[in-house]
Amino acid sequence: MKQYKHLFFDLDHTLWDLEANAKETLHELYVKYNLLQIGIVDFDLFFNKYSIHNERLWNRYTQGFIKQEELRWKRIWLTFLEYKIANEPLSKQIATDFLQILPTKKILFPYTIEILQYLTKKNYLLHLITNGFEAVQNNKLKNSNIHSFFKEVITSQGSNSLKPNKEIFEYALNKSKASVHESLMIGDNLEADIVGGINIGMDTVYVNYLNIKASNIQPTYTITHLQQLEEIL
Image 1: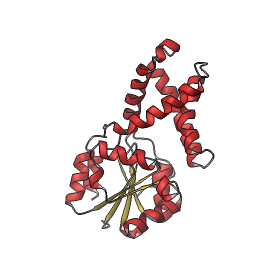
Image 2: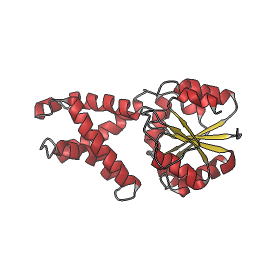
Image 3: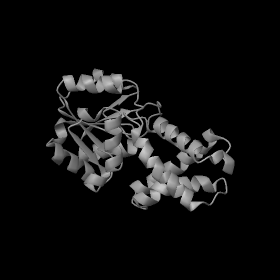
């Protein structure tokens, strides 16, 4: 089996449970702003609608069609419009509060702490490559007590690039003083993490929590639980 030295993790949906943390955060804001009173009766349905708009806008952001600020508040605005609520100030206020509260959440995927401890004890150098915002991602790491495991944290904001673009991976390799042949990219997103790794010539681990059926994208390894990294590393 190939010997690796540098392990590059994705953060959201791979280690830090973005879906669970976002839902918890949005529910707090649902209560704080009494959205029931303005006609949003079913919170779960509201969150599902938000998730759809969030995913679509993130795709547009990663493709360079919209800027960060538009992404941040329009995912709330478009969700409100589904309820015929055209309240831009409220959308922007909730968006601001959301980004303040979200990074304080601490829900990690099962076995996250254990696998990071295991890999550290085996003397791997751990890093992050994330498409998230610099301050937000660093706060997530600190508040969930996993910041100390990582030598370098490379964000799209800091590198001025986005996965799967080669530039963010080149930036990460340069910053961590790693060669591509001794590096492994670990993430849940086929298009961003796996294609990005493949394009730079890096071996990849697809964290397939949802057991999604195979596509034409071929990672080096596929796992469905973080503990399975122990079989690879």
